Length: 281
Ligand code: PAF
Image 1 (spheres, helix red, strand yellow):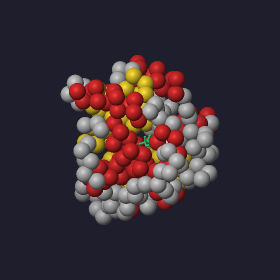
Image 2: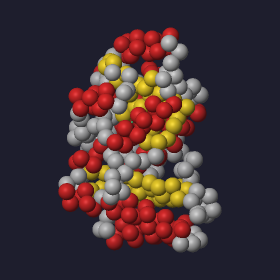
Image 3: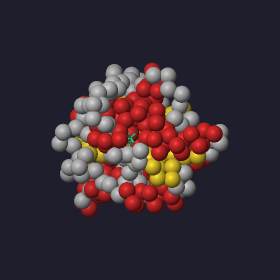
Image 4: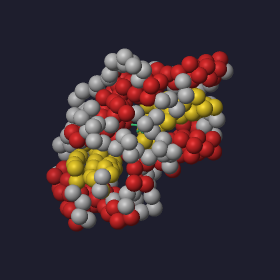
C-alpha cells in the first residue's frame, strides 16, 4: 500500500500507473472502514489492475450541528485494512489539501438533491458533489465505486458525471448487512446497545414493504403504509419513508416497474438511512 497525503504525491503514483497502462478503480471513503467498504474494494479489484482509495472526512458535506467532529475516525486502522484488502494506493488528504484558502468553487446538482436526505441536510449533496468531482479529477480512475446504501448520493454522482461529461464509469455496489439485517455503516458504532437493537426495525420495515408488494399491493400508498406501520410498530419515528424510481428518484406512480423504498430515522443523535429495490414477483 502506498500512502499519499498530497495532490503532487498522488499525481506521481498515478502517472506511474498510467505509464504501466493500468486500469484504475477508485473507492472514495470517509474512513472508519468496515465490511461494507470491503465489498466495494472487492468489486473494484475484480474489474481493475490497480485499486486506489481515499479516506477523507469531508467537512463540506456536514451542516452546522451535524456530526463532523463526532464522525468516527481511525486512520491507522483504515490503512491496515486497506493493506489487508490488497489496495495499492491510499490518498488521505487534510482539509487544507482539499480546500486550500481561497477555495470558492462548488458543484450543485439540482432537482434531485432538495428532498429525501437533502431536506434535512441542506448543502450536503453540494459538499458531496464538490468533493467527489475534486477526487475524480485528482485520481482520474476508469471506474469509481459507491455503495447503494447511500442511493440518493449514487444518483447524484451519476448525474454529476453525466452532466459534466466526466470520463469515468460509476458502479453501484449492493448494501452489506449485519446478520440481523442492519445495513453496515460507519455510524453504527455510535449506537447505544438499545438503539442498535431498535435500528434493526429499519430493515424489518423495508421487508414489510417487500411483503406487501409481493402480497399483491396495487398502489404505492399501500406499500408506503406497510413500511410506515412496521416502523411505528417498532417505535421508530421516521424522518422520511419514500418510494422512488431508482434511475432519477422520481415519484412512483404505479408498481409495475421496479422501484426503491427508502427510509431515514434518528436513533439518539445518530441518523441512519436504508433502502431496498422492490420488484413485483
Ligand atoms: O459515501 C461517502 O463515504 C462520502 O459521501 C463520499 C462519497 C466519500 C464523499 O465524501
